[in-house]
Image 1 (cartoon, rainbow, N blue to C red):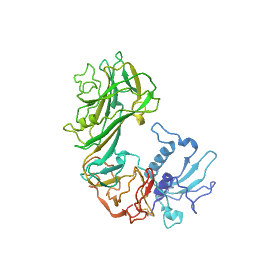
Image 2 (tube, rainbow, N blue to C red):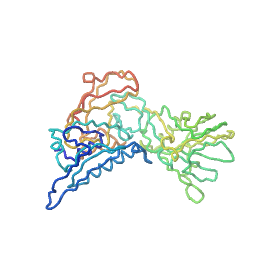
Image 3 (spheres, rainbow, N blue to C red):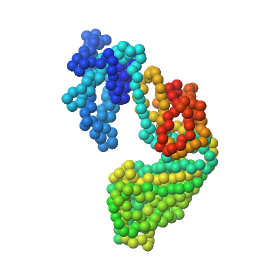
Image 4 (cartoon, rainbow, N blue to C red):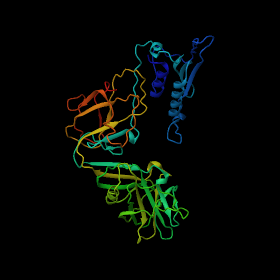
Length: 446
């Protein structure tokens, strides 16, 4: 039996408008029946949902008012008992009754006069870096790769990862007085002997395995304000296996190891003649391979540790200024570290994808299911894939982590689906980047 509360939640969250014999005229009023307890009547509750244009407005976290309302109503339906509920839509001058007032725990199929739940399309996209991962033949799990490599991976194949500053305390300025400022709107790369500033940028959870060979590395900034003039900077890294967070480090503190300027340096990279760029354009450092290789070569480096970079005026640079966006001002455009490395581990690679908040009622019959991927590059080699689901006894799969074998150690479904040169559709050569490719039907797995 599919309870009405679950059906209404599915109806609401999928945005589906139900049609059929159970739909009421706008002017009809539905009354509930007698409650099971003596001398009691179940309250009739009609939820009137505002679907006007204003509901598309976003709150401070980027979530729309409509999505907030859906989340709240879903919570109310989950926690309500012994009431009659219905749904109505409101838009400007009025709106239709989407579902008549009925007992919340009634069988939705019986109310609809159907033998099965009406078909509903559920579409879910991955929106978190911890929800798609790849595990190499050695058991190392990668969360921050720019692409998912499915199939056999050759020894020395390059893996590219991207990590963005995710805290106001991880992109800072140290001034000439030794004080570290963590809440600047802009990071100022200042070549000025009268206003000394040293910029520190720290990236957490950098997923580079022990022993990796770095083949390229850079940091991308977004320009916050246009400035002309010559700027020459020196870039070096914190020669530490796990860079500490930046703290004040002023004279009142007994330790200076958490300032910017006092950290043990790696090899240095010159960043000369920084281009004067317009606001909102990207500004990328020269290649930082030598710095990153120094850091991952330190004893104690572990996949997922933090690394820090320091930007300081070149001693011979004339006065100049570049202002770059910080996490405090624009988190989505905070400094971004990109590193390509090879680990030398060859063999079959396993990819895991996890979809959060999949709105399928318990007991539903799956009529079709598939995964859609976008090609990251051209691949013409013959590839054969086997797709399983995670057989999680809690009914809710956990996010992926960098723990060794985190993907392959999970319990799998009995059902599996092959995706290869004999399946329908075929796993044909991928001949164009950005083209979409859909898996065979996965309903047996789901």
